[in-house]
Image (cartoon, rainbow, N blue to C red; front, side):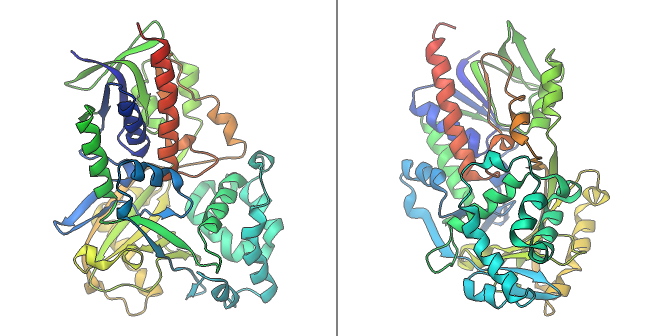
Length: 443
């Protein structure tokens, strides 16, 4: 039985980033993935041989330097494309474009003074250098006094409620501050937002990374669900699934915290297990539509009117060229949801009918026959709930075994989850693992 320097559990971008760094430093790595594909929440599926898309919508901002550095290290930077984006909101039964300062000034749902306050918000958030000074506040406590009640009630509150559901009143101001900072940083001097994407889709990049890893000697195993962990002298000796045992000198876990708690449910670290459960998550249901015509000209449409079963409509082919998708148009309808919500248990047909009947309220010309195909994807743990003083919770979830390490979506804070920061944290944790291995060479 082979003994690996590092066993990585989870093939999302944090696991892939760590694996890349480790093999480049000559470490013997085994990466295990529970599904049949790498990529985690950025993994892909196929409508047909010509049309492969992500299960959940993705793009990069101009400031996403960590993922670009990774791509450059693979000599693939020619495949990164940069495109202007069109954003807007659906409010009061109307689509309002909000991509430029001029479009913001035309947003007459707000009085002129409030439009100006909304516009200067991006500049205000740049003045905050120490996020810990606002970490004790909720979004509402921090944001409403800055932008005013009218702006908050019309623009921000509906989005926060749709995004965080039952948790919306208890989300740290840091989450919103970082979101505003990130979006503001992706705009050029004229105020227009530019976004980046990988030519042919994230699936192409993930395949390139997987091939590079295997060429460097990294073993990748698919469809491996960890069912047992062997622990001795406060070290993990091996992990196992139904038909596989994997030994290692060190272990990196990149799974969600609830999944991690399940893997270690029989360990004697009861306080640590309870700490893991203090961080909650929302699930996500994402309806992906393959359309013969676009719904609109907008790439990212936030839904600010109440009663809709999605927080946003992301028309992917308003960012990437429809020619990459056999001239079809791809749109995502995203809903964050508590797993206790009855809608979570809808089957695909029930959820499709539930969601699609609302499209004609937004797009009067929409007809169901424009849908050539659809697919529905669910993520049990899509969004960590970053409550006020969230950093104190993170201090209590570090792995309690001397040769084990943790790098998960929940730890990306104060940034929000995303492939760019997953790459950053994956590389960062790999350096800690290398230090551990070099210090414990004979172990």
